Length: 408
Length: 189
Image (cartoon, rainbow over all chains, first blue to last red; front, top):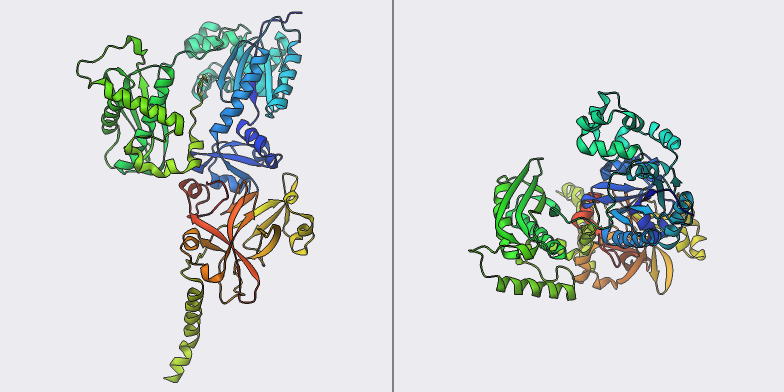
């Protein structure tokens, strides 16, 4: 028995909360919020907390007023990654083509030789994940990725729905606001509203050329997808990165050079781990400095040749920081972005690069020590100024270095 | 002259009382103002003989359809559950009502004071305070095992427990706006 060509979207329900409940059943049924940004904001909440009026992004001091009996937790990306990969394994049991879209979302192609109907596939998959990973998920199956995501969004929580009938699709699109479509933000929605496009159905029925002129090729692809024509590719392997980035909030905002430099070096060491993992070298290093007053500075440094060497990237980061940091201003966030990535095999060495032997020996030693003794066991002395964050085991839970996903 | 001395007498008595406290228990840092508000323990974590005690009845609350017992410092008679000699017991939390003239009138003590031997003259015993949640400045947060505490006896022989605190980590400070945090067992915020 064959099934029509279809794509599925699996989305974990309140993933961070569900993940915490897996290891602590005491949290079941309680209003729970997971905090991010050093404990300042609610980044995920349970349905019970949502019912009390708490929104994602609410500061903790507002959340406790809306939900005084809520239980607040620290996020733990390492644990979330463990469960995320378990879910990925289960989805792969159903389909050989799975896109690891984000830590809690997966797209998959329903095999055409499946013996189950599409609705059965959605239900069995949902049940299997609950049974094996103990995380409740919602599964939506449709003719395209965009439709499948819209279906799973509407079927939440703990839903399983397959819709491939055009009439049923139209009804769904009619009750979906256009900004609920992934890829349509507030600005694009405003633009569409000028042409009386308010719902997903309006968009699907609009003139394709008009949509292309308003929303470029991205919007045109959405138009095809909403009409049941699957044009967006399903990436079962992550396409090579065009850039790699590491960074984030620097603990407490500071204007102290040593502290800021310590954080930048920490981010650089994380970035080099990524370069090594993906076996690429950076041709350019960008240092992004987000100041506490909202101003953003960027320092772009072209490297003499593509490299993943710590000593060369460190000098580039130093120069980048000098360009990006406004003097004496308090810094809140730092980001390092490696661009112009190249495979090491095709790298032209610079004439004036210092000899590589010593740097490579050091890098190898560092890798080996850290593999054996734990991440950051051996690290640059510059990071001593942020020692408190290395000593604080809990802080490493804040680091999200989950590899292989398509988006964050 | 005599009248002036008599007027100063209450202050003199208070001063001597403070000196006595410091002399007996070593160098305390007195916690004042808003501090760690309390803990909650799920109903199922408490043994039946403890649950039957009258003083627990008014501390029972419901959260998410599950019963829990809240032990708050602001209670009229604050108590805490402690593991002592293999048993879970309810013990008076600190000396907020100043029943003891010998012990500091607070519910907490610094980890640094404990480590420096500040309580050695009081025959203090380290104990574990089981908890499933902690409360600080209105923020309830999850506690995996419990909190470290110190069990001491007052001049009447009654047991009292002091919660051990340390300077708050940056995360804890942002989350609760408190500069101190309890010493948690097997984890750190």
